[in-house]
Image 1 (cartoon, rainbow over the protein chains, first blue to last red):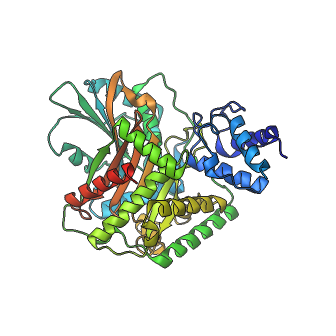
Image 2: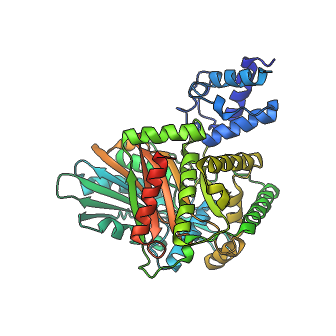
Image 3: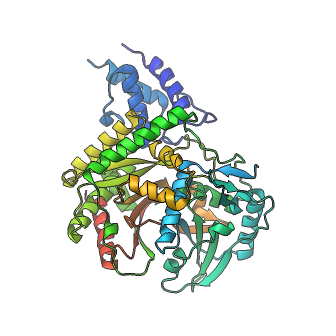
Length: 84
Length: 422
């Protein structure tokens, strides 16, 4: 069982390093789409999750609600990863 | 600012396209943004604003030089020669202005044409050399022209997010060559091979979608490509309709290559501004993958994920840099040889939402916004998607030597229909 908070911390580090400019302020509440997150960023993020946790998150799970914040995305990832 | 800055691979590729277009008798690789304004603006005010920016950024009058390593040579002083012209509207004027070359060799990298209508409104046509900057940067620059309080980044146009070490660069270059060779196993044959007898000019038409139509298209996109899948949906529609067009005109091809531009700037950053920060994700479709929308989308998604898995974004730019020390005619010859003559079946662009600050220009409401970009033959056909005020716009550009007017109109209508009814 991977806690959502752990995934959030990991995702934040990845997004700061590989997706967003260093000067962009990111935290758990950041609205990803409003910050400039696009389809390529999404595929990169899903690939990162697959590499790190060994599971591809189906795109059907990526809804508007899941992208409303980094915390919401982490919760979605955690839910899919923890599904049996 | 230094008096010279290097051209990155994307800039070099744009310069190569410019050379190729001019060699074939076209105006060059230049882009336009057209603002349809609700009221007239003063040419003097516009001239003063651009002149101030030119003084601040002498890069805007730079010339490409350097024998073995092409670079922008930035003049130490700028005389602020701003090309602002005024016209009265007449039929065919927009096409004429699009086909009028910029004198890039003399450092004229942009031009502003003001076209007065019979009523109160006017068009502002901003033309710039594609070697100078990409479309996203141009939107940002135009915003700065409009808003004198806006501060543009002072950083030099260095490549961002690109590997700097040669072993890593060479590795990417090798991968790029291998990928192109793989693509060429199913040799694409573009529309450019038709070469109709026609003036060597580019023509464009714009498809506009109402808010209701845009909503329907976004719902289609979301259903087929998921959230944030707009660009993929647009690319799939363009590929499918290109296949139909080839079939209709009897231009058989073993595959279609569609280069999908990817922005290389980290999200939340606009600099370096005077530089092309894009690379191409090369997608290949076989005719059998273009029978139905679902198949096309599935192939596109799989190729995108695979390219990102292999870190394939950045290949093209590195490849362009590999031969950049060569004189332009040799550079283009090497490039075309590597691409087996022609590899792009359609130029595709998706600049997403227009910068909302451009809904007003110098205090005047912008009624409509158009992006136009030159396309090289081959393939002589390009499609650009963008949103203005939440409404989708599609610009279809074609060389008159490649498509007849009625064929281009049919292609535009087919794209419209496919977006609404995929």
